[in-house]
Length: 319
Image (cartoon, rainbow, N blue to C red; front, side, top):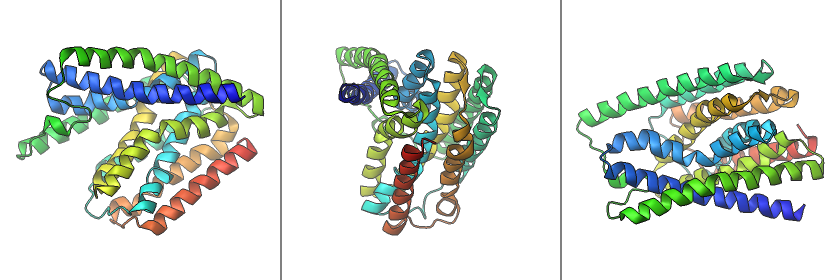
């Protein structure tokens, strides 16, 4: 089991590094080819930063372990709210009064409800994936139009504000970043999925439980790092927007693609608890999004405690 845990952690590290490498390479290649910064932000960065979760989902379905794919998405969305927002609120607090994320939050909530409705059928299949990807295209289209309106109002986007952008990067470095990302992602995903399946079997829990806990927390680390730095820099809009966007992308893009690879059965335990915990975690954001409540250290303590309690329940009940 120690060997499997080592390879699971190794796979996770490879995934995170390869995902970052792919983003850097793709962003700078696109900007060099003349693709507008706006398009790069809405597509390449969004897809690139979610590449580890996407590869995990696809690999899990192909390896006949769909519980890891589903557990990863549901667990990550719960962790994003309770842990990824809870920890930075605990460290320095988040002032959400000036954040205008109402529109994207409502989209995320609608995507969550749609996804839960699909899961209640007991099996996610290809046509569910088609619907999710269509909704994703509508969301991206809406974001594109909003960003264009933002630019027409006189606020231009700076390439340097895009994650991974480097105007001075040489062509060979871009190629190296791209190659390392494209090689590392499938390698890391295979290590993590195979080892997670072995760990689940050795300790007698389901693959879904491993997906909800170990894999979910691991793949939420980039969002956690981003949100903590945003909180320290007093960029609450970045922190809140990062979580909302990540959750929406997890549901629509990752599960949309994964269900096209193969059917994903929804365990009864997930229909009874985990999906509703994910929805409840999403609803926790209502007063912060619509009322502008400051997310102080007290709230950070509550959110973090709720997440630790949830993980404890999942691990010790096998839910």
